[in-house]
Image 1 (cartoon, rainbow, N blue to C red):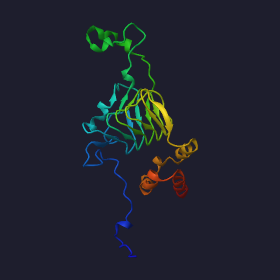
Image 2 (image 1 turned 30 degrees about the horizontal axis):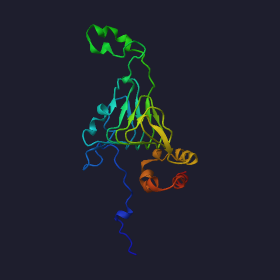
Image 3 (image 1 turned 45 degrees about the vertical axis):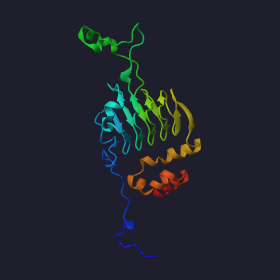
Image 4 (image 1 turned 90 degrees about the vertical axis):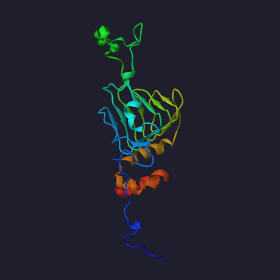
Length: 226
């Protein structure tokens, strides 16, 4: 068997994807990485999380994060895949419900604006937090203050009104837990491995194991790094 030349590609180190590129696939401008795109201090996104939209993917902050008047944050982890039309409804969507009308009169201006105090103190569920390695299907909707665990899958068209466990698969309106992707034991092992927190060089070297290997394979990588 011939020996590869010293400058052979077989001898080169794997090169990680660039997390600073807004368009990681130049031939597919519909795909954008969110971390280098978002500017709002109320939105935090981990590296490599992306959004896919054939129309205006770069308008994610205004088209997909709605009623974001603060101070609650939207926090999205690393390596999340967000399908077209997925939306995050923030606490600014809330209206008063304790009086005869829910209409926000002060926002319309005129002397009605003198009553802005009536819009204060509305219920808040806090930050909306998405873990790492979460996959959102087409047109999924996440309501305010929801927490979605690592490795979860949000089915297309789902309306997520309550927390989603690690590696849970949810679907429907309102979304309900359909099943988990792994056993409780394996979920605990995957959370301990936390491959998304590995140095990017290690992730790059072990992409195939992360995508198609076993929990044991990933544990062996961790032991080899110790």
